[in-house]
Length: 143
Image (cartoon, rainbow, N blue to C red; front, side, top):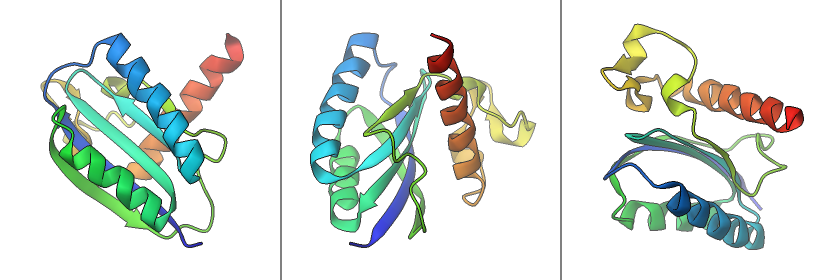
């Protein structure tokens, strides 16, 4: 099995209500677990940024469904690599709603709405996702 990591960003058609996000996450966990896909989803009212990892065909299938999902506009593939390990092996789908405050605070990566994942250089986007993942893990440990 060839492991791939895919990172995409999209503009959301509208902010996703909490119940919609919970449904998306529940469905993702079920489907991804069955297909050996792991990942992390970050959202703000305006954008989605997601990293998917797993077998090439399974990751490509998930991404194809996302591209066709009417809740997303301007779905853009930012990075597609064959990594030596998974970043999110423990999560069928991790989640953070902290995308608006994503590090780094560089003004060149922000617009009037806050952090804009479309402005980040593709080779640095995984660092942003890892930082959000680490924040989420710290918060879960405190809870």
